[in-house]
Length: 259
Image (cartoon, rainbow, N blue to C red; front, side):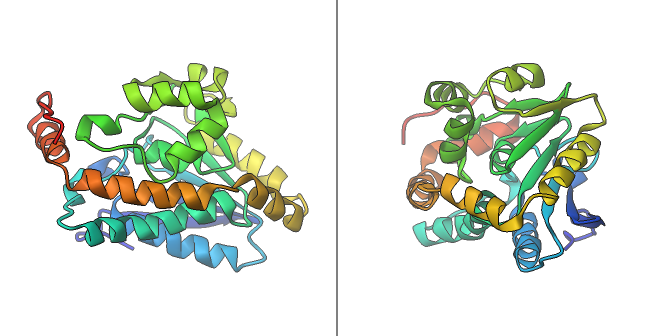
């Protein structure tokens, strides 16, 4: 999978029973563009059917995990188009959260917006000590998506999730670990190595026990994703979202009108 000009890739490699996926979209700081989401879904579907894959690690190239959604591709003109935009992304989230393969996120640099959603859909988050996390969806007139309203409260509790989702303020890795958002810290540049160690432990567990544990912990996910699909589609079509995008690309504060 590659963007025009070959700028967007999802690299794959095996480390024994562990599949390592590396997002590589340097021009957008590894933004989770629709093409990247579709490719990750395809690879995860293949992994789900491959008994030799016992665990997955997801990371980002260039010292950054994922900067969020790709606003340059976020042009939604109808409710059906909005729902379709989220459909493959939600399929991916279902595989990560409720699929049979344990998944570890290795976070260097930023995990922002959809990048935070992707990390929270994983079973474990390993972060470099200088990593940063943020859910500033409201600044572009949107709500947290890709399962984040479901997965974030599971990690940090409803009260802290509310603060993270509503204020959109950055969190450093030490604070993120303190509140339960991050599971392990690693020295800068070593998040992938530590994540691989954790994934190897998971790969040695009984696969059926892992799969059923993930499934029971994911109860309620489908309902949450369907609600999100409806609400986020309304926001895609709002004037405030258009203003948020214009302000982002114009590098100015947004002037929201509640429409």
